[in-house]
Length: 455
Image 1: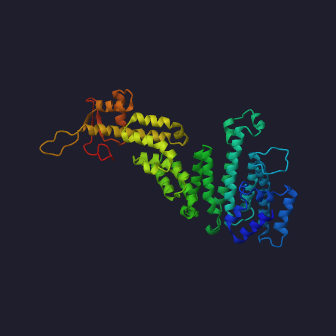
Image 2: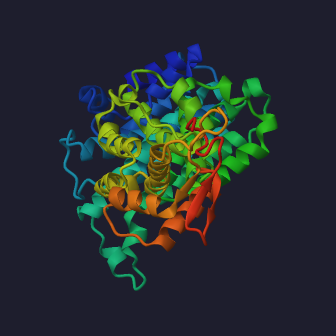
Image 3: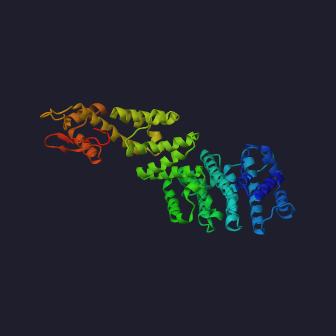
């Protein structure tokens, strides 16, 4: 306990928030001996006595108000209790306990710590340089909630109380702890958002870290729509907040990524592309996993907004993305509808999991556009008149398009279906022209029959 408070005093005297947050980090596996020394003999009376001396009696204690002293005393006592549960579940404690260790108990103990830290800002006037303590509290609260839910799902946690309920819903119980966690993460968010102190002293500097934790939790819960409420709150209070570019780049990248994914899920692909592109450009070149996540949504955006495909060079560092996107890209380039359908079917589970299946399905229109373009080019030129430059044949029989679609798709298709597909292509501005139904031909534009393809 002495070493813990010594580190606290050093960080407090230097007003170093990151150092202060390190004293609350519960990574017991990195240095078990250090954390066991803090735990001591596991006596609450001894721990309380030590903290009373170190915070209230010791002549070398840091200078702070009585309220602030009380706040930190309560935080480190609660931290000590949580640490005991973490050491127990990780198998480092030798002292016997009658109850079994569980991640649920770890989560509940850490939740108490999180609430004490929040209380420090709402009741004990903690200064804004200590905000990294909120980061550590929120980060591990989420991680412990996930571990607790996994434990419940695997059946290692006693669920007798829940299964006895008449209205027991297994799906609602699956993420019970994480759902509870989001409520406390939202309290952290509100604690930062509602601070009315001048910006240089404001807790608003912690707001994007809290937002990003909420985004991660909502997406984990498959409740991404709840993120809109966060964005609305940000928009409403933007005039009193520092601009996003004033925050650490890591927080900017994460926020822009989720903002882009939210726009993507709402099918606002132009806006999604803007946010995701910013995240891509700011992301560190060595953060391969983050770059891969950004590309997962940026590639489908580009496909729909600019009809462009990723190069093999771009995908070279990302084998998983190569497996997902290269077969689709090759099928689109070759205008092979059957190959596109096979590639989409083969990657279906992963595409659905990543929420990009429906967007990629629209890529079939690009493959079809390329196929129709090939038919148009194969039609050659009309006979030139009076020495004029030759003009491509613009009256194409529907039967020619039907034959191409049948060969490429590998399935029979009747004329009405073909005309429906052609009308859809014209409506989406992937092809310029009109269908002369009675004559069974498609009359294409003499200039730019297939916009964006130089034909």
